[in-house]
Length: 98
Image (cartoon, rainbow, N blue to C red; front, top):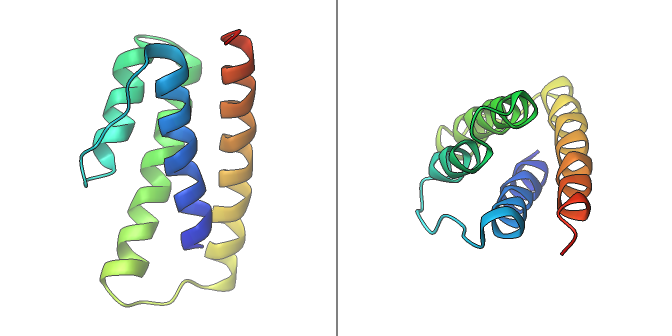
């Protein structure tokens, strides 16, 4: 599950760099989500994807910092959400025509 979340964090940084030439260096990964929202403005697509980032970060904090193991269902859902987000990020970067 943590690898799925880390993939989303990296993809978030990649989209921010592609669209605005910047990424969050803050150790609090919520700031990366904030930056993506700021870059995306009022885009409903970006807002929906930022919501996914925040949901996955919340799961990461529970598993990583509270020493609770993820259930099989939680892990499976996290991987599915991460795959969708990474696909969106890839398409967004491609559409940026870098």
